[in-house]
Image (cartoon, rainbow, N blue to C red; front, side, top):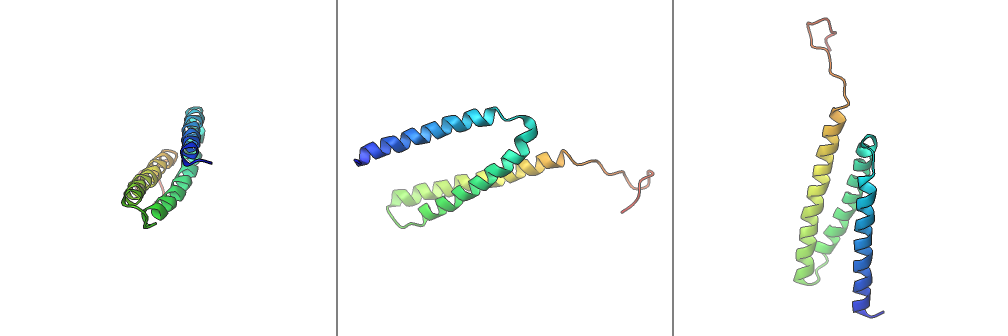
Length: 106
């Protein structure tokens, strides 16, 4: 297959995956958001590994630079995802009774 034709197919698959992903995410009920976010963090971790490989491949400068940008973006995505998931999980914890107001001290 010619290189230009292959790039067009890859671009088409990328755009189609982005569109399908957007449609899937917008239709997720709020109750399933936390488990979905955890799965998304795992996928972001995989993309972080791939971006590290691209950044350290030793090919052209452009490849290294784009790999570095991918590492930065994937790292921000993973850290932000874990922070948001942690914050959402804290919303489901029951408040502990305060000490000295009839509650047991621990």
